Each structure stands twice: as C-alpha cells, then as structure tokens.
Image 1 (cartoon, protein in one colour):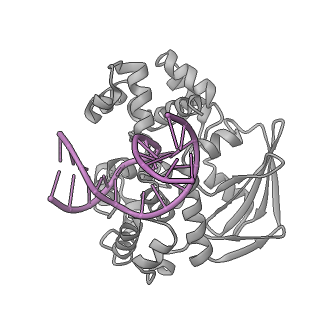
Image 2: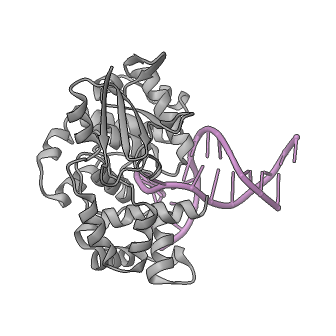
Length: 288
DNA sequence: CTGCAGGGGTAAA
DNA sequence: TTTACCCCTGCA
C-alpha cells in the first residue's frame, strides 16, 4: 500500500469533486472518505480538516499518480478569481462548489462512460459501469475487497451486443459495441486525438463515434485528459440554469442551444467549461 | 397495486 | 424538427 498526505490543497472538497457529475466510479465510505478505481489504481481519499490523505494501490508512484489525476498542478484559485469577477451568478455558484477540481480521466473510459450516460440517471450509469468492469476488467484486491479496472478496448473487443443487453445497457448496447470496434480499427485513433491541439477537429472525430452527440462529445473533451476548458456541454440542467440566470424565457425548453452557446462564449470565454461545471453543480444540488 | 412520466441525448425518420 | 428508445425510479 502507498500513502501520502497533502496539506492545504487549493480547491479540494471530496463531495464537490466526486459528486459534481464528472465521474462515475467513486463511492462514499461510511467514514466520509471516497474510494475509487482509475487506470490500474485503487485509491481511498479522506479529508481531515485541511489534510488530504490518499492511500491505496498505485501502479506507479502515488505522488505523481494523484498529481496527474487530480489536476494538482493547475491553479484553481486563479481560475475561480477570474470567473468570480464576471458576475454575481458566477460568484455564487463558485462559492457553492469551491472545492471542485476537474479530474484527468482516461480518454477511452470517459468515452464509454458518457455514451452510457445518455438519457440515463446516475445510479443506473454507475451500476452499468460497475457491472462492465466486474465482468471484463481486471480484479485488484485491496483492503479486504475486490475492485475491478475499467476494461481496455481489447477486453471489450469480442463482447457481443447481446451480452451488453444482458448487463442492462438497453439501447446503448449497439453504440458501445460499434464505438469499441471503431476505436480498435483506428477509424478514430485515440493516441492521435491526444496529440491534436485543434479542438474542433478532435470534436468532429468524437462525433463520428456511435452514441456520441454534441453533449457527450463536450463532456469527453472537458472531463478526460483532453482537458478542453473552452467547451460548454449543454444538458437539461445547464439549459435550466442558463435560462434562469441569463436568458429568462418563460419556457426553458424553447431556448435554443445556439443561444446558450452564444451567451456562454460571451460571458465565460475560454473558461466556459469550468463555468458550466460550477453552475451545473449548484443548480442541480438545489433540486435534490 | 398498476400506470406512467422522465432521466446529465442520440440516431433515424 | 420530431420521435423512439432500455431500464429504473418516483409518484399519482
């Protein structure tokens, strides 16, 4: 087991990070800590006052692993200051979600996870991903429990649509199958995507995958290691909060995507993705 | 207890 | 631009 304790990390609240909708494989423990699997690592994260305790099984050195995954080299205080100056709405939502950090999640896993997320709810999404990992991923034993890595493209290569259906994927079965084949065939080459600085080109490539539409593509761009903070994923909650705060039409479902995008670009610019996350998290927690 | 809408959209018509 | 879609949950 590896362990590291960090003090006074800028922007680091467990609930904000793990419940803000960016990830599906972190679960809360009885003591308030969270345990999750990413890559070939199993990690438990606990916060005691200003101390953050990371412990688990990491494939390489734990310090570098968490620096990368939790985006620790980025200055979130600076980002929050910039966004807070925009208006009172941003100030308020950032105050609410001040501990958010955007994780550096594996591109392949993020693609599959967000295809599964379409027209779905979080408990079910988490359940599906857990069942896929348990059936096709690798087991890792830690702390008296068995955890499972998210399967690689190779591990899913020969899984049939029927098997996915039996796991409860519903109509997403075919999409996962087709996207996996496209990635294995390199019709979409993930390694090239990681190198490509042109966000629009990367987005077009993602959109060519089965089950990836505009919203899912933007989530992949924002939440994976692609890390594009300028994109602005629009789902029902973002539509709701943007209409409530900025557009103010009687019927939010009538507000066009283009209109929301325009406002987001004008107000938030290159940090639209981050702004989206603070607004989304704030608005969604109001309704729970 | 049964029926039904709706959920962090996408693809097909 | 509109509609069906797996499955699960919440609620009338």
